[in-house]
Structure formats: structure tokens, C-alpha cells
Image (cartoon, rainbow, N blue to C red; front, side, top):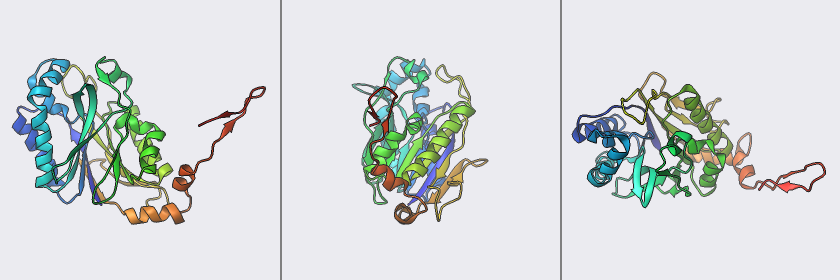
Length: 288
């Protein structure tokens, strides 16, 4: 299973054609990979084309640009024979969600909506939380998507891994070093505690628009369990001074270390027994 991730330079394109060419350039650069992950809010480049305020751009895009955007992801997935984790953008589906489309070379289009919104996302007033974490199938094994802040909640990744996902893709947008480290630390922790692979993608740079007043920062990375046959620090690849990172993930070895590794995080977590907290003068309370 060959995966590629990018540190994505955000910009406002001059046209839909240029937005498409930018994605195609990334697909060409990662054409050996089976999976390509783009970061959270990468899809906003297609929304900003209308040059209105944020909410107006989002509204116009739903009727004028969304179908073309989905069609473009599918076309690129087919042309480069990749499963594309397409970053995110606001999509109206009864209400607005921060949605990540997953485009398959065969023409299937699936998605994962963000479950936990940050305070800044909540302050918009119209973006809503999802309540579902999905596990997606592929010829290379099952995977899941935790969008940025969602990766900071161990329960979500664990539910996906317990349901069969061996890889968690984490598209992210962070505009401070605190945020960048939160996502990277979360990704490394999820890989360790679930004995799975995690892959983050990030944005970089500043865009002059009313919804983003910070500078996107962070490194994309590919992370592993911290055990025999994997890097001692669990960092397989990281972008640092490059815009792209890629690696071949050994799913067979992943399954092996769950059974024969130095520790049994996956097995012990999936068979986790109820733990009780005892308050003096009170009855024990189950933690689950």
C-alpha cells in the first residue's frame, strides 16, 4: 500500500482550470502512490473563485461548482489510478458539513464529514457536526478518515480501527504551532495506541480572505506503531523542507506486530475491561 501526502500551499486560483491544473500537478508528482491525501480546506480554492464573502461563496459553489469539483476528483483518480482523499470543503447536505470526498479510480465517490468542530468553526453558526465515523474499503485494505480536530479524540480512531481500518488519514488545517503540534502528536498517539498507520496532510501559507486571518503551518507526515520493524520514534516520513512525503506501508507486518510485538496495544484496547473509579464515601463509577 503506497501512500503519498502533501504540504499544500493555499492560494486563490485565477480560474477553475488553474485549480484543476494544480491538483493534476500533485497527482503527477505522486503518480506511483495508491493513495493521495490532500489537507483540510484544500477544496476552498474552488470556493474562493466567486470573490464574495465566505458564506456567499459557499452558497454559490453548491449550485455552480460542487458537481464540477466532484467530477474533477473522480477524473483525476481515474487518470492516475489513485484513491484521492480530497481534502475538505463545506458541503450542504440538509445542513452544511465540513466534508472530505474520497474519489476512487473505479468512479465511486464516498465521503467523511467532520465530527468535532473547533470553536472557530462553531462561531460561523452554520457549519454542523456529523455523528458518524466511516470505514472505507479498498483493494489495499480498509481505511478511515479523521478530519483534523477529530484526530485528537482517541475514541473515534479506535472505533474505526476496531471495525477493520488499518490506516487513518488525517487531512488538517492549522494556523499556529500549537495546532500543528496537536495534530502531529495526536496522529502519532493514534498510531501507537491502535497499532495502525496514520497519515497527515497540511496546508501552508496565507490567503487573503475573511475566514482565514492566520498563516497555515505544519508538516505532513506518515506515522507507524512504535514497535519492532518500525522507526523507533514512529515517524516513517515527514515533509520538513519538502512539499511531499510518500511511503509503502507494510500491512502484513502491522498485523504481525499486533500479535508478536513488544506490546499488545491493539489487542488490549479491543478487549479493554471496565475500569472503576472509587470515590471515598461514594459508590464505584464505571468509566464506560
